[in-house]
Structure formats: structure tokens, C-alpha cells
Image (cartoon, rainbow over all chains, first blue to last red; front, side, top):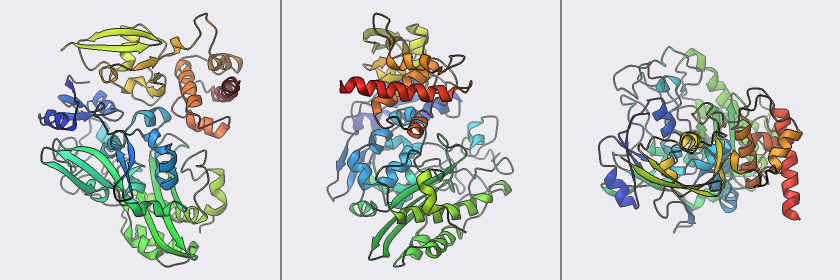
Length: 355
Length: 163
């Protein structure tokens, strides 16, 4: 690990002031940052410890009838918060399908949004990477691309965003609260992460020194609680990043879909909300044909970034159908033993019957 | 840069002066406090051999800066047995069920199991225990014995709490 200066901030204002130094980075749990520093993938000269900032570890009602989640709330605390999990079950399921229990006990809500891609070429400092060194080139392109992007990629970067949590958040119109040198502002989560384009080194809309202080879910987000699932295909049953994942949520009224939400993970460098697929669901009776139409719409613009990842497009279609089928069947009373797993025993009956 | 730090480790207050903020909790425990029960396997949060309890919650000690945990209460494998040497129920269960072979991952497995049982999410459901223990790798493949040990200890500890 590189040498760095360390300071502990006692207030948001103090943190923002300390982070104005060039080369500064915020440190919360550090579960991703310290891992990257150990590999010399990132080398910040100054860590500003924000773990003691007061008031950022609360889950509380927001003024408008939604919920506000402080940036320092731990993943496990949020997933196991009874009221939160009841109102936003797909968010809880996504959180519990990510990482390990030890990491979820440490990792924070804000840190989850800020985690970096797990592209192996980004991690390998011997490989050129436009994220690490703008203009250096991308070793992933033409390399081992089985897990790389099939949407939103560019000729400069084909990495994916690794978060599970962000996928249902994008579907639920989450809002990111930010404070920084220029004051406070909010950004929709859907606009928070940037696609690579010509500047893959820019990963979010955060300006230097800006700090995530909270996430908000709007009041209508709780309206999907009866029919909300997160489904995640991974290379091993637990403790693995998504190959492809989907958050599917329905609001049913008189046997018809009054509102539907769908977002995909593992496809792109940001959580992939698919509004065209949501539109295909509106007003329809839930069923296999409708869900297949939604899946076609969701992947209509998908494009493999390498031969080895072409399978992800069809896999994603099938996961969309199955996630919608599971959502229509209803949120389970208790989360399955293997959260988000397509192999969970309880998932098979309604979900496996796709063509 | 010298940084004073106080940790309560296995019930004892321990004062440290770090000359460098790069010291992880794991290195502070092993290299400064000579508590070498917590193991350094991958050192990247992937294997779980370094699992300890921080303020009662299991975390990977290799992915936390010691300086960031100033004031915290740490429990390591060395702090689990009773003062008279009587084994913790999870330790006893690992012996009873052959929950290890080479033993390198065992302190992390046991600390993780103690954390899992405290979290109260798994009960004695084998699938929930496997899922809850997925952050601890065992290269000898003693998982069958580990699962039985955790189930057994979980039931024992619940009975004790009820009594």
C-alpha cells in the first residue's frame, strides 16, 4: 500500500474541506478502497475518514413520505431493518445477495455506490486500462471478456458496474444527496453513474471533494412491496458478483399491471433501467407472453462487447422473464435462504417455465 | 506521523502508537499485539481467515484500518474461551464435529460462526448457515463438519439463552 496522510473528519464541512486536497479520497469502511490500494490500483495521498460523521447512520422517514438512508448505514443493517425490508424487499434481497456477511457488516450505503468495477484488467496494473490511465488503451477489448458489458460500452472501456444494491435502487427512482465545496445538491441515481464514452476515467457525476451523505427513496417506491424480487445469476451460489441480474417489481390492480419497474445488473457500467420494458408491461395481465415481450424490449439495444459475452444477452432475457414471473407470484413472507438465487428451491415452481 | 490508538481487545484495554496509518486491524493484532490466532490468508477480504468481531459484529480484519477503529471493542479467537480455559460452545462443537483438517481457516470460521449465531438470521437451517458462512473458505474442504458444528452450537447457545 502506498503511503498516505490520514485525517478523521468530525463534520461534513470538515470532511469536504479536508478532501479539497489533490489526491484525497474519502474512507468509510474501506472494503473496496483498501483492497484497491493493496493492489496499487489506486494510490490516494490522503484519506479522509468519514466513519465518525454524526447522523449519517440513520434510516428515517423523509419529509415526503419516502425513506432517507444515511450514507454510513451498513449494508447488513439496512437489509435486516424490518420496516425497510418490508417496504422495499427487492432492495433487501439485492443487498443480501452481495458479498459476504463480513463485508456486508462493514460496507456502507455510500460506499456501495462508489465501488469500482471488478474488471480484471482494471485490477491488473500490468495491463493498460483507460480508467486507470486515460489514453493508455483497454486490455479487456479482445481479451477474456466473458463477464464484460453488453450495453452502454464504448471502444474505450467495456467494464461493468458490480453493485447489486444499485439495481433495485435505479428501478425505484432513488435520489442521491450530495454535499460538496459548492454546497448541497441531489442527483437521481439513474444519472449518478456515467457510461464510459470517451472518458471512462470519469465514473460518476461527483465533482472533486463531493460526498454522498444520503439516499432517498420516493413515496411511491413502497407501492411495489407485494411483488418485488431481485434475481441474480452468478458463477457460484454465494459470494460472487452478478453475471446478469434483474430487479423486477410490479404493482397489480384488478389482475392488471398498474405499474412495473425493471432494471438489470451486470450488463453495463451503470445499473441498467429499462423503461421500454416497463412500458410493455403497463395495463397488461401478468403472464409469460407479456414478460417475454418485456424481455425483448429490455435487451433490444444490447450488443456484446466480445464473442465470449454474447450469451449474456439471451441469459438476461431469460432472467427478466423469470424475475417478472417471481415478482408476479408475490414477495415471499421471508427472504429465501439463498437470496436472489435462481437455484433456490422456492424459485423453481413459478419461475423455471420459460421457453 | 505518530497516531495514538486505543482498542479494547478481548476485554483488555490496549494502547498503541502507530507510526503509519497503513496498519490494518489484522496487522495490529498479529504484529503489534502478538495475537496470531487471526490468520492472514488472502489479505484481500476473500477468504475470511482474519474474521474477528468488532463491536460485536464479524468483519474482515484485513480490510479495516486499525486507526479508523480507535475506541472499538475487538474479540479475537484468543478471547473466546472462558478464563478457566473452558471452551466456547462453538469451539467445542468444531472439535466434536471434526470441523477442520489443517486448521488454518478455523479461527476465522469459528469467529464467523459466533457472529452468525449472534446475528440470529440463520437458526439451524443448513442452507441459511451455508449462505451465512460463505465468506469463509476452507481449502481442506471440511465444510460438512463445519456446517454440523455451527448447527449444533447454534442450538446449544439458543438453549442456553432460553434457560
